[in-house]
Image (tube, rainbow, N blue to C red; front, side, top):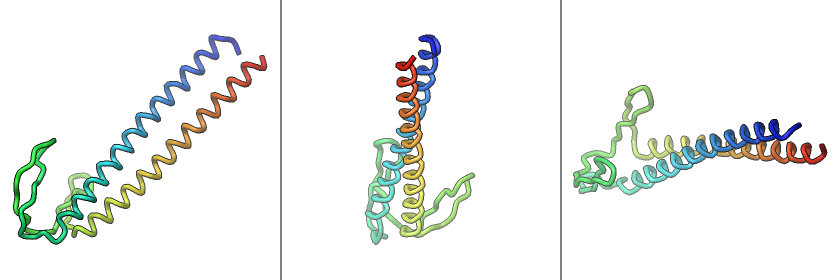
Length: 127
């Protein structure tokens, strides 16, 4: 394998690694956000009738009175269902578990690419 082929192959590896790292970052961000939501739900449980600070945008909150612990949850395709706080927390935890599995698969992909890079380098050194 000549230098041009080797450079092309390493360029492909680099691109694949960057894509996987971006996906990993997105998964980690989603897990972090889900954990925050789960924690926030725990804080409002049992607080019906009390004032809370409700977010209305990034870094913007309004005082609100919690009228009910019944949540309206978007389950996809703009379909909304009513759920209790514990049921919603279970849904969130299930999603975090699935995201964790995705993270593991992405990490395995990175390991595989690193193995291919090592093998390519060893083969190049032999020639």
